[in-house]
Length: 248
Length: 222
Image (cartoon, rainbow over all chains, first blue to last red):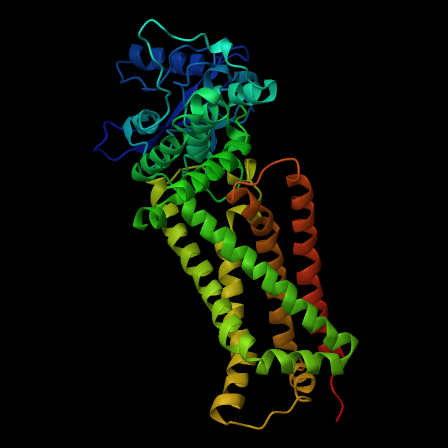
């Protein structure tokens, strides 16, 4: 198929970017979206032009590295998939596709379609961990009885790959779905309860410091999340935060 | 404490609590108003009670005004902050793909309601304050029904009220159910609460619109 691509090109963080038009022929339905961009880049390189920079790593939908706002939606029009798992069969011959970087003040553009998502790392570093004694006397995690339902919910929360689609989709560029998943994966387990009060307070404080917007419960994040992280995690984080505040 | 006021979660809880408080007020307001259709004497009696009871006048009324102010000032502050959080704007942003219109446009339905409140205060509250505290007119427990019905004689006012109630319904459609999520309530009771909130957001504004239309179509004959 033949596609008309409108791609955001930006030299570096301090330069102004703009949309550049490309026409790409010979795209097949079985190609992934990133393979389509690979082909475009090969054409650009053969013509001596600068290739389009985009983030990618595992290309298996599990690492959270790929991003892209495709036709106004993070990871494109398909549901529960990352951009690397989005296939070109979801598009038609002659389609125009607008490709932009995820946009948020807390995700500054580095170059073209690559944004700096280290704000997520800093939120995680603020409290997304448990303290485990590694002196050689580590207790087997399975020695602690855990309710099956709680374990499942914690695992569901832990499937968040931190790609940033929630922020990109949210009209407020809020990072509450990401932060709440990271709070929840510990809050639901006994090992995580020990530092629960400090964790939620520190992670929410860092999230606010990074300049993310506020949650207005539109639910866009949940719909666009490639891992189907549920809004119940945000409610849990709100509860955790309120209870942490009351405990001081 | 200042850290708490700046916190995104504390702010959304403030929006939720002030919103829920206004929902309770709406219910009370509607209960009294609907009596104007059923029995004018009951409406007069309740209105007189609300107008002259010291607890209502000097405690509940200031609390209500504070609730309204907190809700819209915080709403504006959050909207500005949220706009800034986007940074550069998208060339193409397909909001309709993942969230309903009402949830994405609370600021606009809210602005219409705020403009309506200005008219509503001018229509009833300013008049009431002038009657009681400036003109110092005598108490008249029978005046409220006539005063209310006469307000709906002009077609334009009735239409403005009905349009505003429609926007109020849209605002409640997202806001009422959403306030429970903001306060951390999302469990097995949530679907029931959500259904109740949606029914409320249709029935109450529709009821208010009915009252306005009823009085427009049934003017007081002297």
